[in-house]
Image 1 (tube, rainbow, N blue to C red):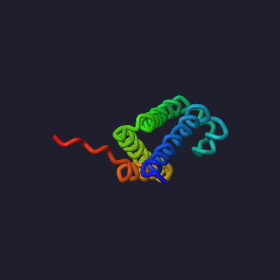
Image 2: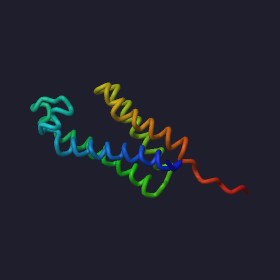
Image 3: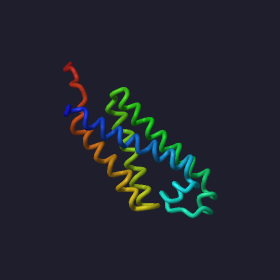
Image 4: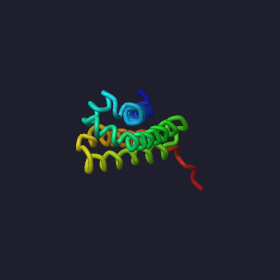
Length: 127
């Protein structure tokens, strides 16, 4: 397996996960799938559907940044957006549901470690 393939796969999986979260939060929040996924009552889901859509949009921006990093090969984009996912996952785990750390932050931590270890920047020319 090529040196760059493993970090690319890891970043792509984190990006895909955030597209999935976008879909859940924007379109299924107050539907049976969203209610089950987020352990919500119908009343709470209906009352917070606009907030969830906004939250889903932010997850879409995280995915877009990660896909852009993959598309351009820009290591700094990947590092920045993985860092954003990690911060969001840690904050969500601390303030909402602890399992968010394992479902959101941990995959991004693994992807970031792979990017830092294997996706080395091109050697700079000496002056």
